[in-house]
Image 1 (cartoon, rainbow, N blue to C red):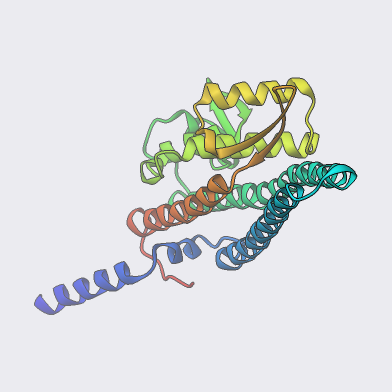
Image 2: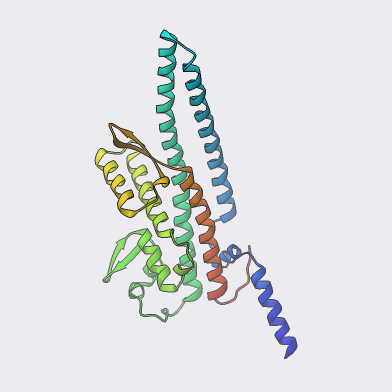
Length: 269
């Protein structure tokens, strides 16, 4: 009996020594988590260096202008103005790049992991709770792109992620501001991919109001203005880095859920 207890204790210690994210591979996901993250971080770092370079160029021009007079000064001011405008568009381009990598990664993490949890934990029977989610067809139950409201399907990935995560007891493990992060990121992604860098005026005003109404931190977005009205929205580096950190926390949360809640299986990282 003591020998059996020792074996169980050793097995439990071994199980806990495995990195939480490694348990995600038990869900048989179809993407490489580490390599995707490395590729994204590499490009984001190159973009950051480019941002620093243009910021330094602008500062050097500002110093240079103070040493000039007449036409030379006017020409330098024009060049400085051009650089400022260019930096705004570069910020937008880098934001498009960042959201174009981060949003799809987050989407596939939740979609594939929740699908995997559905296959591993409830392959043949319905879950044991009377949740509205389980009244839909099995294929929809585990598709986080949809939320079910009074028996009707609505396409809303943020609400779908949280409805499904709530139903299986996963959402309690998430960072407290995850819903705000996902809402801000996916809303910005949609506007950028539909409208480019310079959105229609009504879309700019709508997004500006949403930042305020949703209570998103002001340092998540950089807002360039024209005539005191919003013009171009860019993701701040503070928000981009916060998204990177949050992705790691989400992966850890899902991994811990797999480890603690699903039947023990061989981990194959």
